[in-house]
Length: 109
Image (cartoon, rainbow, N blue to C red; front, side, top):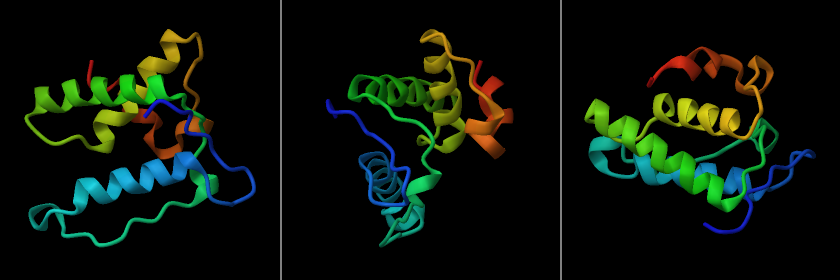
């Protein structure tokens, strides 16, 4: 992905929510991963805009964390990867942005 994945602030459709839902579906589509047929995301639940290059970097970082665990990529890999990217860009990941996942930011080190 090279275009930004922007979020929606009015509960409408957004590129970021579409990307997340498509990723969730792809990760759970196989029968041994749940056999999902549909993935939904609350558009206002997406709290960050990500340029295309940043998405690639987060996914690559998460892939390395997952490889260390010997598993597929899960949220426990994506959250620390996104947190690291934010720190590299000079932003402190906040509990407001990460909500219930904030405690995962130190995992994967």
